[in-house]
Amino acid sequence: MEQEITKQKYLNIKEIIAYSLGLFGFQAIVGLQFTYQAEFSGSILGANVIVVAILILVAKIVSAAADPIVGNLVDRSKSKLGKFKSMILYALAPLLISTALLFVNVPFKNVVLYVWIFIVSLIWSIAMTMGDVPSQGIAAALTPNPTERTNVVSISNTAKQIGFSACAVIVPIVCLIVPEGSKVFVPKGQQDAPMNAPEFLFVGILTAIFGCALFALIPLINKERVTNASSDTIGFKEMFAALKANKPFMLVIISYFLGFGRQMAMGIQVQAASIILGSQNLVVVLGIVTAIGSMISMAICPFLIKKLNEKKTYILLSVYGFAASIFSFAIGHFWFQNPKNMVLTILFYASLFLIGLQFGAVTLMPMIMTADCVDAYEYETGKRNEGACYSILTLTIKVCLALGMAVGLIFVGASGYYDALAIKDFSGCNKDLIFFAYTAMPGILALLSIFPILKYDIVGDKKAKITAALAERRTTDE
Image (tube, rainbow, N blue to C red):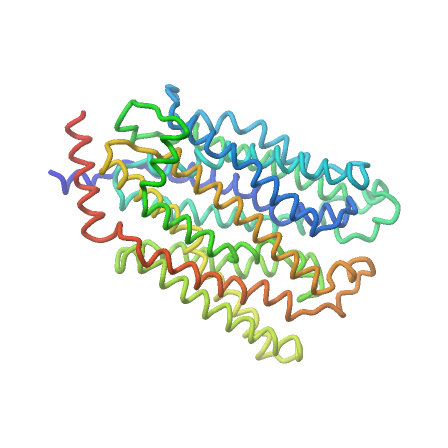
């Protein structure tokens, strides 16, 4: 009987598509902010980009208070619509408006400008949290079948990764569509910027509307099938105590922090395209090549998990990521010296694809492992704390994204990018330095992230025992 319950299928194709498209839309918004806000602030608003990166990081840390609040509200929710779905609906309007505000060409200068950037970044971070926590947490509630959950997380996170990288393709296309005459509205002295103010604003509004429309599909179509095993609500003190007691989950979080360098590449992709490839619009090349590798990585993750387990799959992908990143950096170093060499050119772009094959570890595995940690906690205590766990996970992701951007932009600044931006000539920039930040540094930190996972133990027979026990318990409760 237990075996039949754990193998039962709950999700239909319509729900899987809706959840995947919803994450695609949400991550398209996140990817746009992550990739282009700093560049907009520097090239259009005239702000110091390193200061902007630090402000964004501080805004995300300050907004950390919203993560446990949202997680606690989710866990306490009695909404008939569903505790996750109701919160997603509340997030739509703030997320749409704040995304557009990120790319408004305000006339502010000096301190007032930085205050504006910080406030808008803070509001956006809170709105993002309102959508991120429930959209990630609902993965643990869509189905009690762990194999089915792994498959839907894999499919949806492939769409999520595509959405996050979509701006690298969409933005250059929009720049071609927006009339050249729109440059008359650009302030004097900014006409030669790679992107002008109307283009940034148009992309921001378009992405916000399109992303939110897709994001709304999650609450409209998906069902929450796994509910709290206990009707008790918990306060912040109890919530953090529960998280502290969930040691496997804390190992996942520590590992994610240690591997923050994987976020650096996306954060400096626009600048890397300008310096390495010679044009900002060639970010589409970096985006597509890396995204294809990432998609393949997430597609094969369920097969690796089935053959190995979550722990071994994470370690394998991280070790591979280190090796691929160091290889790509070495190839890039020689290619920069002889860019007309066809063999080196082919190896260079192939190495970028190989780097992408590691990203299932950072994009997909934490989602799967967090859901397993939620199950393990329910097995031990009788309570589910998806809201608490996923609020901490999304907070970790936000901080690591901002930290990756900040550290990456420090490397970019040291490469001479911002001096070159003023004269639109990147030939004098240090390509090795920025490519080290784009490849080798993330690889080194990926290797470091393995150490906490060595103690992670919700795999194999232990995971099977937890799944069977919870299935029997839920059947008894019914």
